[in-house]
Length: 253
Image (cartoon, rainbow, N blue to C red):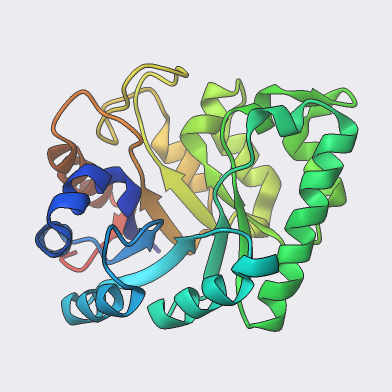
């Protein structure tokens, strides 16, 4: 069975800042079944949610600050307004993965956020970059150390591109994470730290292997951090590739 396909809106951040509604309408016209939010680009969560609903775009997941301290109520209110059940921590900086104590501290914060998510009927995720897979802690990749210290209810939004940049096999990592790898970020390119990314299907990742390993994934989420070509064109080409190859389905097939 194919997976539904969503777009991480950070991909189109420059265009969204100029014409949020027009760009979201183009995303829906391409055929994406959902979106993943990271910023409202000047819109209120309520206004964004109304537009998504009008266009039949499901909010598959949302990147947000940890729902802790002074941010707790704001984050939970935003998630509820969007009608979303998956809350994602998008980032801890690379310097937080350079020692045992630092990684344990990251895990403590993630576990605390997960407890809040669980109390509010949400699934909490951590989204990786390359350093969790390249940096070693106690002789093993930091992400494996995290697995030993995170609550079993913490899921992973596996950024498959960054896994490969970090020197690991993304299909193997997705398989290793098993049921916890319930969201996959799909991006393509040369799998280097600094070069531009490219439309999915035009880079070096083995998508048959990666997506084949992701049997537990609920969504495939396209995200391109940067691109040398027109970003909306790359978003459209990525959709076409995933649909044509039978890896995903959207609102048009």
